[in-house]
Amino acid sequence: MANSRSTRRLAVILLTSLGALFLGFADAAVAASTSSRLAYVDPGAGSFILQAAVAMFAGAVVAINAYWARIKRFLGLGADDGNGDEKPAARSDDG
Image 1 (cartoon, rainbow, N blue to C red):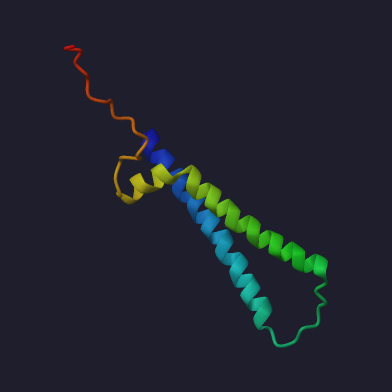
Image 2: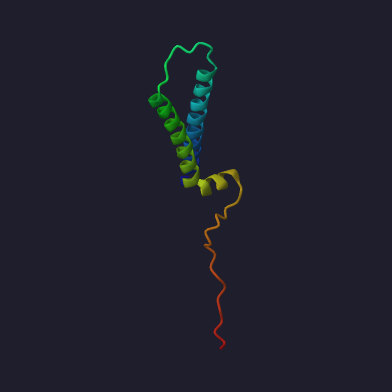
């Protein structure tokens, strides 16, 4: 039961992050394609827009990185996360 809830939570987080990223780019595309430019964009506003774009990208990277093992398991790409949790073979001390 807990696995199902964590999988659902992961899906919601990923969809929210990707949705926010998509909406940000869609908004930027609509603003750039408008024929009449009545608003003045000063360097401070441009810097704010750039900062928001970088923050969205960084947030998506951090979210994916934090849940990478769960994402792989959810997509069925393997349960081995490569942590090296396997125990090494026992050595014999024969001399």
